[in-house]
Image (cartoon, rainbow, N blue to C red; front, top):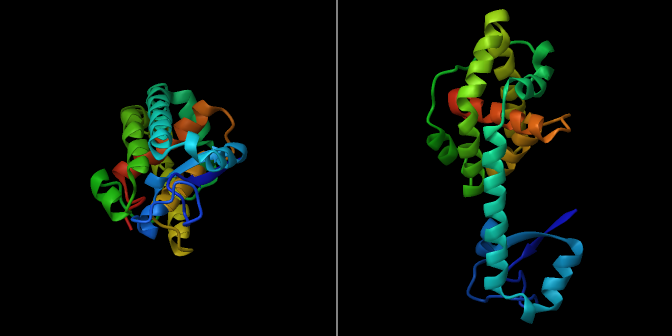
Amino acid sequence: MGEAAHICGEKPSAARYEASMTDEQRDSVHNLIYLCADHHIVIDKAEVDWSVSMLQTLKASHEAKVRMALEVAFADVAFPELENAVSWISSQVPAGNGSFELVSPEEKIRKNELSNGSRHIIACGLMSLTTVSDYIEAEAQQDPDFPGRLKAGFLEHYCYLRKVGHKSDELFELMCDFSQRGMCRQADRTAGLAVLIYLFEICDVFES
């Protein structure tokens, strides 16, 4: 299990505390690094060996590897993975409202106050846009209600999360979890994300 550790300490007594930082800066994603419980203790107990610059470099290196892995994973999304990822919508009632009109992803990112981390996932997911679009079009040839049912499932959960108070990156992360639910294979989970990003780009999921 990971723990959110502060690069610059949260309190005056904490390792690498920086008095000039505001509380908002201390708790921002830029000052947090996820570690296992053992290494969380190590970096705080051996502060002299784990400077702010070293931790920032390690974090940046790891994030670069994750970005590269995301790009590779989305590039490999194909029809079989998409079929597995959306199998749950077979019993979903088609959406009775909303639209599939093109909406600027940048506008939705701004409106939902998403961070650069979420922005990058969206950018990677857009690499699969044509594949997801072709898949949905092919399914619609056999089942005209398929696109409506697909949107309905995501839109219903999105509206529920908004209603109970989730927003910004937390909301986006929960929608990512929703898109991957019940799937064990990483390829299928990535396909689920690709479908979410497709809907993010072309309809009113994340529009409210």
